[in-house]
Image 1 (cartoon, rainbow, N blue to C red):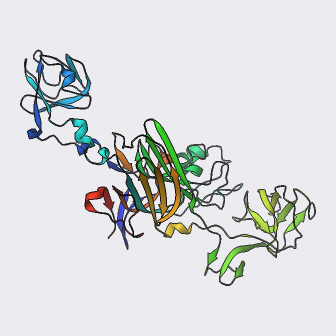
Image 2 (cartoon, rainbow, N blue to C red):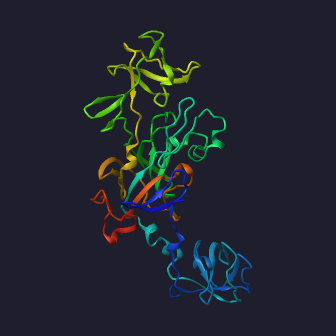
Image 3 (cartoon, rainbow, N blue to C red):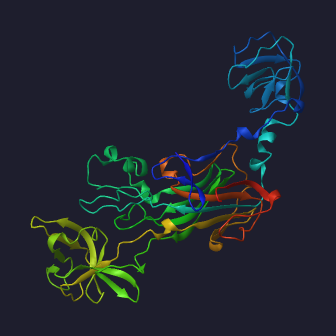
Length: 442
């Protein structure tokens, strides 16, 4: 499902857990006006009833010299008979049964311009440099993650609920898990597909990674392109270009550690108890009255009252006396008082921002990636002449749920240029250079 709705701007919205996309249909670009067909000289050998066979036996002219796979076959009267699936000198095999009756010695007709050339004439026939751009707001696919018994965000339209990994039936019980993770935590490397064709994939990729923790870690994204020609695929990726932030501005937190009007830390406890002694490897820490709450999970860094790092949590578990036990990794502890701090929960501030993402391909030379017109990656490549695959193009999804875009799409353009459009708030290029352009802006 994909929604278009109007607020301050029009936008195409791909909701969390949807599987929608826009389709640019390869076959719908083909038109067959009757004035554009001609007699082939290939004659039908025998009468054939309508919808009776896929194979048409022919004679007089070698059919392979007139018809190719994918061509449309017409009767002598200009009606469509079918699309060629295979051809020999004496037979034409169609994809489906013949759509109309044929008479013995009837002269089959074909397009003056081959069907393949008709299909390739617009977008699919472009073999030169190009620029592909989109203005988007990505959503967060990580959710809050989990620690030991925690759960994910449950009330957001822009980040999915993601429950405890330890639940044995999590895959079958939780829709967000079955769609995003497919049992393998694949959401941590989700490909947020902006444009998909067999030969060209342009997407944002979650950079959490399979070895990373999603607890208190909203998704952060790299910009990636996969381009294929002559059976060779090149993948070019930027560093993280959209990230979460634990530094909050003009935000009130009664437990926050403030520097001017910003806070990056919040007080976790005023009476934390350190076990196994200061400066001992693998020491534990007890927090009273369930103070770990949603602030501590695997990977959380804990600081003393002077913001010196004590250590990084390996695990956190609830105790029978309503306390929480934090087990550290093998980091050495610094001197510590009973007051300890942790980083503020990371916020996916990008949920309220737009990003202009650009891919520039230079024929026979290099790929450039831009964010808001700033170069973020560049790589020289060696490929055969690039051309889109003769198949549909999709905007917003690849082939699986792990290649689904979740977020808001404002504009997208594919143009015969080698520079991003100058404005970061809209996409503009010359009309004659535009191969396709969709806008949902007011």
